[in-house]
Length: 183
Image 1 (cartoon, rainbow, N blue to C red):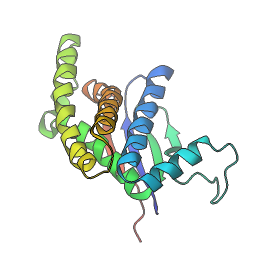
Image 2 (cartoon, helix red, strand yellow):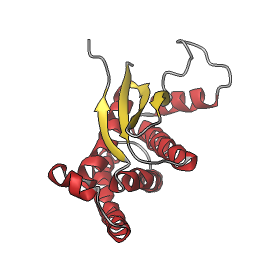
Image 3 (tube, helix red, strand yellow):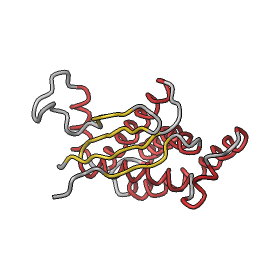
């Protein structure tokens, strides 16, 4: 499986906790998408995330989502890499949040929101995240997981996506770029 990369463009001020939540959200969604993409991928992902002595490629953890570089400034960025198709789906999921929360032609106006408007946008963001989950539901329906397992995973993905949506609504997560080198 190839290794894919993408960049999250960030702006504004971030606390260490908020930055940690951003990466934890990405990791949680990535891990759950691995469950949908097959037992073997998920089993290997779990093995690598729990194995204290990596083996294989350079660091032995080619299925894990990794932060490979970061520039903490405003504007700044964080580059993430992981297992090929799975990383691409995570990138598309986050890009979907960005595109749905801030419409392209209204992007500049949205960044000038007052605190009350930000709260309203966050509530609206919840319904837009549900739309994103619809795509994930289609994927979930193709797995051999039970209904309760699928529901649990989808609920977790929705909860994990909230910090991403909030960061977008507040104008602190501004874009997602594919950095994968195609051969």
